Length: 247
Length: 247
DNA sequence: TGGACCCCGTACGTTTCCGTACTGAAATAA
DNA sequence: TTATTTCAGTACGGAAACGTACGGGGTCCA
Image 1 (cartoon, protein in one colour):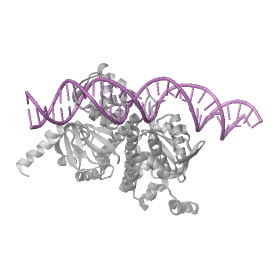
Image 2 (cartoon, chains in turn orange, red, cyan, green; image 1 turned 90 degrees about the vertical axis):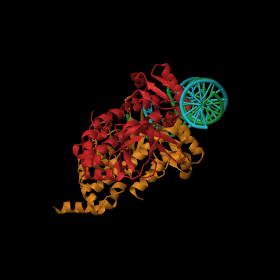
Image 3 (cartoon, chains in turn cyan, green, yellow, orange; image 1 turned 180 degrees about the horizontal axis):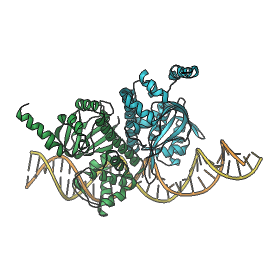
Image 4 (cartoon, helix red, strand yellow; image 1 turned 60 degrees about the horizontal axis):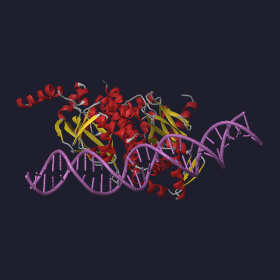
């Protein structure tokens, strides 16, 4: 090993491990980290960047550090709706964890940021070597399943305002700021509602002092107030995530 | 081993294996079957029988042979909606597969039948011993996840008639008859809509010759016609199940 | 700096579905 | 059989959200 490679190695285990912000990676035992880290690559996650295409093989799993990934179910008639979001608490590529090689849903960066990615083959190899790694990934997958189930519940029973509030809270949980850089149009696509409906609802939120808005961006002002609007449509997946993954 | 026990043993591996109708159990390798079968218990699955309670430990996994289990997500305000159904193609207790010990959702027999069940500890033990068993269970869990995601899609984007048609098709897939013994009230609970709405929609189906009805029961008459109503809200989870679990 | 495009505010008629509630018919229990 | 309960049919006003569309203001690029 050259001294340059040695220095890089030191960086990897000393410096880079310390500033891993992805919660899953942060939870890895030293052994699992050693298994995984050589294959991790830091990547910028650009707004709109596609990370998974339905029915296509998954090339990488992404451990998000900042930003938010939208997972969107689509059918043949091009009906689409978001079934989950992923941020620093999780990873993309749940199908891989379940032993499948293809993506089920469309997944793309709703809010840009950065993260680390790992090629699918290396990920599978690491999972097959380490039961503890596998167990962690499965708990993460379980947390995502719970989120999807409660999205189904909200889609079926909640009103637009409740769903919108729920979405804002889930996004906020995954951001380091109160500002959510999104257009009404994109919120509408994710919720599967009209753009105009989102505009009206956000306007109502603003009048009530819950958020402030400007073109292409909104800012959470009164989070407890927004939680009140979302009611019990928000909270269970978050509590279960905590239970599964620890404080 | 007494001759009586020996006879029972012969029954288990010769006769009972042959008439396993649960698709998952039927797919097990001889080795996995040997691991699992000693712990299987044939059980009647009575209408309304509860098999999982939210946030309570899972005591048994159920391999359904006939009948249909409804998995229903619930929140604190008692909003509820079905997030998936399980029949002979699957099993209850997905959370266990994912390494959790508790049920996330309410699960109960929507349509009675019978099946086999296995105590949770024995199931976990078997999974830990056999990677191939674990892989199969995870693919089954993956199939269920896909179903839940498309339920979220249907809940958000489909009209009542489309959702109802979808539900009838999913039930039909899991029954050996065209008759679905359910009241409008229960269909309404599962879809998260008004009972009266279901009545009107079913009435419309009947007028169009898609089903016939009588008190507490409806019968599919024109399945292709019903598929047309459901459109592309039906089909993807079914195709994916086939792909994952084989013909 | 002007034009093109994107984003948001708003409007209107329409559809879908809700909440509620009353009725009669069918099944079940006494 | 009678009483009771469960289930299905129907109705009505109203809420929620839809599809569509138009115009104005921001933003970006040439």
